[in-house]
Amino acid sequence: MFSQLPTIDAFMSWSWAQIAPFYEDLQERPLTPDTIHQWLADWSQLTQLRHEMGARLRVATTLDTNDEAAEAAMNHYLDKIFPQGQVAENKLEARLLASGLEPEGLEIPLRNMRVDAELFTEANLPLLSEQIKRSQVYNRIIGSQTVQWQGEEVTLTQLATRLENPDRELRERGWRLMSARRLEDRQALNELWAELLPQRQQIAENAGLPNFRAYVWQEKKRFDYTPADADTFHRAIADVVVPAANRVYERYRQKLSVESLRPWDVRADVFPFELPVLRPFTDANELVQTSATIFRRVDPVLGDYFDTMRHESLLDMPNRKGKAPGAYCTNFPASERPFIFMNSTGTGADIRTLFHEAGHAFHNFERNKLPYQPQKASPMEFNEVASMAMELLTAPYITKNQDGFFTKAEADSWFVGHLEKIILFWPYMAVVDAFQHWAYLNLADAVVAENCDAKWRELWQKYLPQIDFSGFEDDLVTGWHRKQHIFRAPFYYIEYGLAQLGALQIWRNALNNQAQAVESYRQALALGGTQPLPVLYRTANVKFAYDHDMVSQMVDLLEEQIDQRLPKM
Image 1 (cartoon, rainbow, N blue to C red):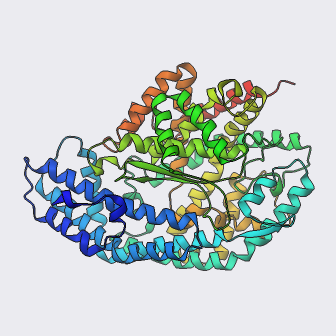
Image 2 (image 1 turned 30 degrees about the vertical axis):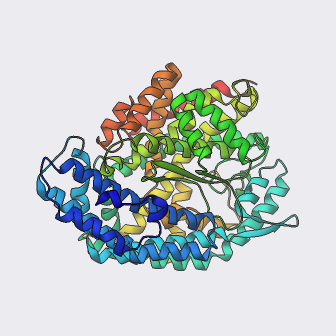
Image 3 (image 1 turned 60 degrees about the horizontal axis):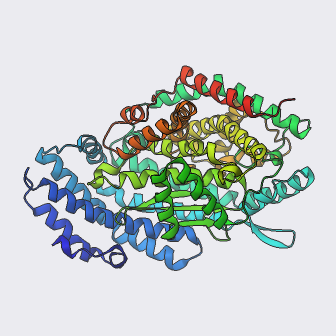
């Protein structure tokens, strides 16, 4: 029967009535030690087709947020296929668990299935579909934010790039324009938030849990650290990283020769502008071609993976009006291919973004080789190690004498900026993560936007006191509007902070032996989700830790490497 399953191109038009008989066959087929492997292979084939259908439809809605046909197709999937598919998948997971069969390599996936079984309730299916639809609303609001700048309509992403300019007066003028446009959507985003929070609390209650944080901790399979551990990480950041961040900001203030750093002196994500401005490539094609050369130098196999993406049109690079914000890598599991989406505007930041998303892509290539779909679901805290480590493993090959992007002086400047951004990221991450812990434990307060504004201000002043928002209080307190994860991927942010500690350890290993570090990295990627999080880290020859000692080690490494690359006075 499963030989009748079509290619993904044909499957994209299938209805649930066409899909359902295949799930029914799997539900009714005898499940024994002799049949289990074929059963798992068939289930994986079906699941991968359905997952790729959803991924391709979601990608289409981000390529053009104004594409009504794409949104309608996505909504049809969310209403007519996604809920039924979730029910069918849950029944198959329950059947496998009830069989008592534990094929080799499925120990961790079976553990994850037990959690899914505990969380699953059909009452949540329409709510989960609605959450995805609400994320499309957020994309549409942000994607439509444009302004007139020097006689041209530009997206705010494009304008932010043009504001990487030594002319401070120009930066301020552009920032004020961006600020005014963002604040036009303040009410719309507040209303969206007020819809999202009660839905998320209801999802938790339907699953028998007291709050959405408890739900997410199970749903994200966070077996190896607790909310209390997240607080430990926050405290380490406050004690160790914030003083280091102060030193970075002070260097930047002196570089600009200004009395205080104002919001137009940094990007919206609080990272300094790259001044002097680096324009290391002319268009997206050059970005892709030069990066391909760099990836091949990191590792020939990784280079082959990226070439496959180039040749099969699995990259959407340029920013344009109507395109969703941000960047991501998604997986097309039936095709065994990743897809990278980003908003390139010709800056050095775009290089970092592509390196990051390529790390995710390489991870997908490696884990797609595993035989069964449940084995491919690796923990997010390691998924981000894959991406962040690639930002660093590429470092030896970014200069022009290696066919890279930069002169030696430019490379030092750019890479110092990258290392400084790692330091500056952790305090920002702590603000975003702590804000969400507060919101989901204080729902009655958090549903009121003014209370969210006050909490964001409080956390900002604790972790990021260096940027002077005097006279722009509305911009400061609505910073949570500009973090898409808060709206679209709740509680998915601490992973970046934890993974950065793992990625830096891989880089520390690479400073001693680049080839061995890359080999260990690839070995860990290839494990997919077949091992627990600490074992994935150990396979990469690093440690899963987030306490004061580990944070201090990594901050010391960063400051030492920054000092080596800073121009000597």
